[in-house]
Image (cartoon, rainbow, N blue to C red):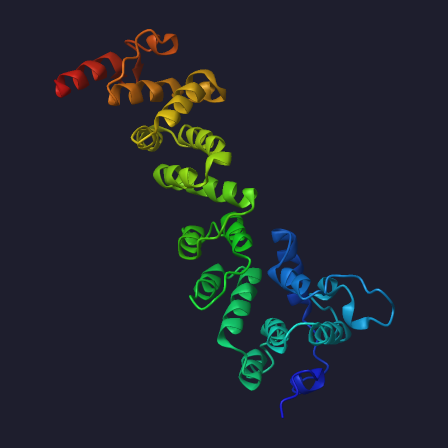
Length: 318
């Protein structure tokens, strides 16, 4: 019989095993980088993040302080705390599986454990994905955490880490969002993802903002206007401005657009007034009598005279 609750039995190949110093250092660095590891969240959900009520409650020490375990004794205490937690066996086994992935130099101990305890695949997939997230293996994590068998778990938190730290893996945050559709219950996650979108695609960011509802929509829309007029110059900057101008604004959005770029906080942005002028020209609206735009009559931007553009477009329509 495979006695999975017996540390010495599971670690029979090396009962005195302790995490190598380089593992402990790397894990601590990742926690500092992310603020919180996913294993911290898992241990908290198991009820292992509370201080012991009395000295005899050895299994209920603050488990997050025991990960990463620095000594064999620490590892044994954490192991005991997990299997004495008040959750179902397969949930305890899933957390132990996470720990054992740190120890795979011991004859692939984690996969042997999964096989012996018959851990349900969805728990193995989830904990493997969370382990990969904590280690920064984002491509591997994405493969696991988008598996259709999984119940959505920590989805906002996963997206936030991918947005903030997955820049080396281009498109990975968008791939996760499009596959899993996190609820974005935390505003900071929604704003972070929106900022990522607006840096790569004005159109995607525009439609994302619309879906966020009325409470945050106006502020996101204004942030989109800032993004479209910041950062990039030359042809790329002009292309982003044109992409913005060509969006199918509602009447309310049209008002926000002009008010923000002509009279609001966005009036100081590079070529803000030119964008309003182009939008009015493209939609067939007059810009005469609007002081801020009247001053652009005959004005040239990168060799373009706005009066010439207006006349040319008028002729093409007639």
